[in-house]
Amino acid sequence: MSVQPAMPKCWRIESKPHKFCPGCGHGLVLKAIGQAIDELGIQDKVVFGCDIGCSLLSWDFFNCDTIQTHHGRTTPVVTGIKRANPDVIAIAYMGDGGGYAIGSQHLVNASSRNERITAILVNNTQYGMTGGQMAPTTMPGQKTETSPYGRDPEKTGYPTQGPEMVAAITPEGAYVARGTVANIKQLKGYIKKALENQIAGNGFSFVEALSTCPTNWRTNAEETWNFVEKEMTKYFKVGEVKVPGPREKEGQ
Ligand SMILES: Cc1ncc(C[n+]2csc(CCOP(=O)(O)OP(=O)(O)O)c2C)c(N)n1
Ligand code: SF4
Ligand SMILES: [Mg+2]
Image (cartoon, rainbow, N blue to C red; front, side, top):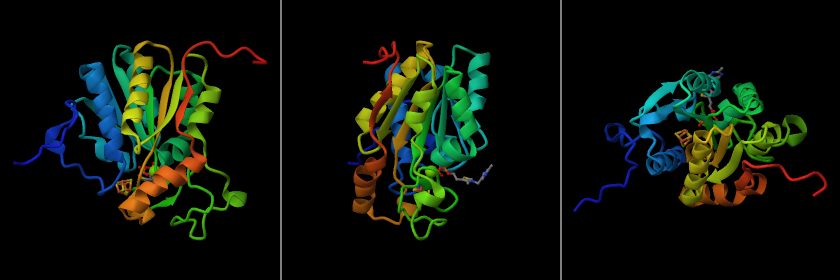
């Protein structure tokens, strides 16, 4: 008897198996997104935007309206769609290179304008699709194709703290969290809350997902999970960073 994998109902079965490398975290993040869409019953309303980078392999993942855009530009593209059609649920899906480097201005501007969209960013500590170059999220000492002796923060700075930055510059009503593919249930919960925040019209919603790239990390299965669970969490704190509601009073 063959065992059928449990796929979210909103996934396109015809496009599976997907094209990510074995052990890649993108498929897990997309599964969490799919489960959140199913549980909220919003498949008919979702417009899914994906970026350049390995995220573009999700262009045929969902039975939802989908658009693929340039680096980091997924955020303004789905913002335009949302402004023109306020009833849609707009999701921008991108990598850390696209969201925090090449298209970082769009994340900053959408955050400070509190756009009513949901951005989901996959942090795999480097530029995956192009062969593993250093990204803003590369950790001190981490070796990549362009930091062969390890990232030196004196020369190239410390890892970008994306959710913390977004939380600092968004007005009230924003929802911001960092999840991990090592805890899919929690990640799905954060994505669901981010989508609910958009549905409620509160403001910008942003979820970063710590993710795996065994191909460029050159890690086996055990090393891959150790890296995401033990190394990445030294720099990237998993949890909710900002939830809608009044800010604490000054001095508290
Ligand atoms: C403006 C621009 N600069 C550079 C590239 C080349 N490029 C394509 S994918 C990519 C890396 C993407 O990395 P990331 O956003 O972290 O996604 P990942 O593949 O890691 O999921 C780069 C630099 C491009 N397509 N456009
Ligand atoms: S290169 Fe890395 S991020 Fe891209 S599909 Fe392969 S494992 Fe995933
Ligand atoms: Mg990346």
